Image (cartoon, rainbow over all chains, first blue to last red; front, top):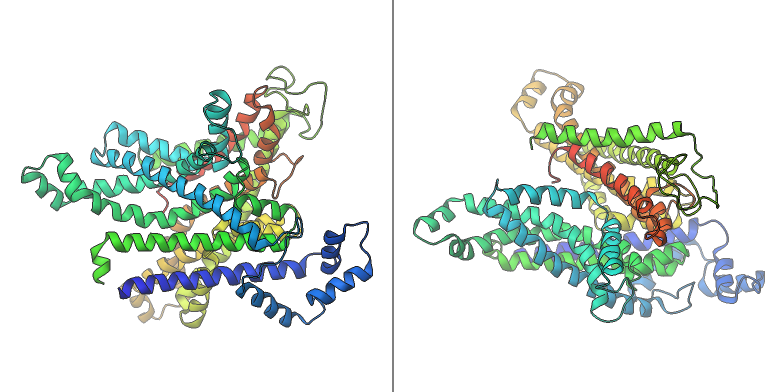
Length: 314
Length: 260
């Protein structure tokens, strides 16, 4: 139990680091951007034709932009602590409210992608590991090396043109029923599976070569039974542990893939906010993506802990 | 496939793309010159790889994109590798509070996925390419730092290093004879991966409209521009994707081992 608490405590520290990093970056962003911040906010509120010096001054007073910067930094993080993320400069809606809706979409996409990748990667890798040196082992090596060299957006375009445009099996983009989630999730899953199939292959090859597996075979269990009873759990530990590293691929992929498939999640919103210099929205989306990354990592830690009795004992 | 033949294959891929980048200008077309009466031409006389939706020569644009990507990948990876490796060596040699400070800093940077960090930097730094360099260097120096620090710490604990110290040989000698050979090999591997990451990051960001923007002949933004014409000119859409693939795969193969 102590081990688990220590690991999850590390994740909590990571979450605080994410908030500090994103918060400071966005605070600096506001101060470093050329031009008058108050004027820009006023312009986005009243329109560029109607804004004047008096309106900008009113905004400056209201938001406290005339105070010394340490006070402002304190107020900024105070707002973060109270989960007051401000109002979008572009649409005028509450950032926290918009994020709630987007987070739902992103969660649906990432969980589906993770499930797909677990259905594709580890089984294919395990097949290669059971017969290491065989033809499938070689083919999988080439396949996964090729997939790793392809950026997610290229894979996505390929799948979109092939499955949606050419064969018209699936909708091209957008959001709605369950069919819309398949293409973006599959795009992300292929990138993840390229990595996880290699880990599964090495883990299974290691188990097959191990003395305990040889003993299980020697006492008369056939390959399939021996693998089911003695192999799967041992091989699963590195695969799940590696999921933590793969989450970087997932979160980075979400930013690009959501934009490609017009999936209204956090990644899509982040790109829009960056293009529109909508700072409260940039801060909110980056913060939620970073925290999602930490939360998924914590879940991986938990899964490793449950799978591996040695860790529970520690 | 053996390690050396894998490296050879990777080197050949990179040489092919580099040769294309260098020989492209000999064709003489301007990558930015439009000709609206010759749009989406298939490969043929005058335009060996056809033209895009604005009648720009594809060969010239792809070659210009290759020079951009290569230059970018090299500079960004260098900007991450040099400070990262030096700080790693410094941390291992010096120990104490500088090491703890740097390790904490590395943890803080890695708390966020790299692409997110790059996007954050591009959101506020001015210019098209400078923020990408800064962002990628900021995100990737950590890997160089960790690997050089861990390797160096391992080497420093060896008896032969202690013997060298007892013989009165200075830090310079230990750095040159004991640390550098091992750190350099790992750093070279990491450098190839970092360059690959830089190429994909820039292309992916340009594809969604962050960083390089049209009419800059960047592979990712070329694909954004050509996506609506996939039916009329599939080759024009395929070529930038193929070049990205060859470059990144070449770099990964050249690195020669599985990514840790």
